[in-house]
Length: 267
Image 1 (tube, rainbow, N blue to C red):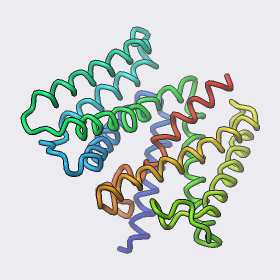
Image 2: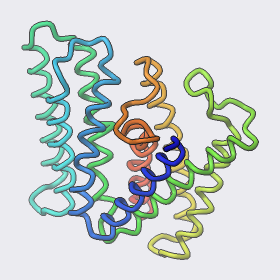
Image 3: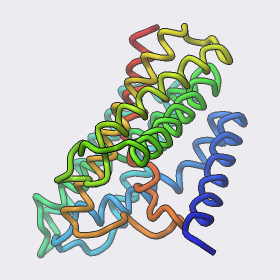
Image 4: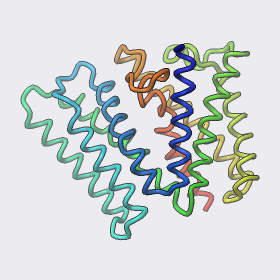
């Protein structure tokens, strides 16, 4: 089976599961993305910890699970207020600090940096999915459609007419033309979503799409920089044809918070 076929099959399963879970509701979505969050945390730990004396990824994965579940519960359990979520995040950081300081042979700066990346670049964006679904699945599904459209547009336009490198030092294949093509197609998708789901005005959908496209590209470049520093091609190998979880969700980690902030500003 060719890599292209593997990539297509994996992508189709990913899209079907995401859309199905979103329509089923926030609880199903939370359960679906929990293992995704944990695997992404494991990959982030490995990427950011290259050269550090890590025993394993257990603590960062536990930390990611606690933060993710707490943030998800904020939207569905009245007693879980944002203050409770902030307290959990703080206590997780304190526990990580103690574990690193008391363990012989640790590399405190690298390991603490890795833990913070796991919390704020993995657990936080995944945990905020339910916040975007507050009131219905339309905004989250629309967000994912915009994300996929931007990725597809950037790839196709970059392949067809891409000439000018966007940031060759980090990602040699990304072009300015591809970036602009992705943003324009994402904005067009935003306009189409406004006709389908008028939960936002057309200009709001289109503005959110532009923000998501730019944040997604930034997240993609950031993960590329992590991989380049770690000396690896992919963040993992769990997804046939795609690499690791972070290779599939690199744009997501910055784009989802950006979408949520934009929507909150509109409301």
